[in-house]
Image (cartoon, rainbow, N blue to C red):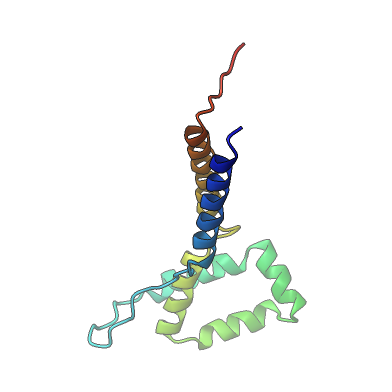
Length: 130
């Protein structure tokens, strides 16, 4: 086993993990423009979308745990303006139940690349036989 080679590989991995660890997470979006008129909203479609989300079992149980009745929820929905209701419907569209798997996929791919680079760098081969 070549000890200097192992030390170099270890230091490369340390630097790589440090660089990955210090990279800030960038969750950015476009800033809305005041000059552009908002698009026309369809209150009936937005209200239907919000009510469909409220009818799910988990949301209904959570709202009842907070002490809201169905009549109170409908009364509060009727008090919302068209723009507020549209914004709520858009936020419901952006919800990802359970999250997405891209983060896990990226981490697995990075691990695979690091292992492949290590095997290539050390000159070792993996042989699979039946």
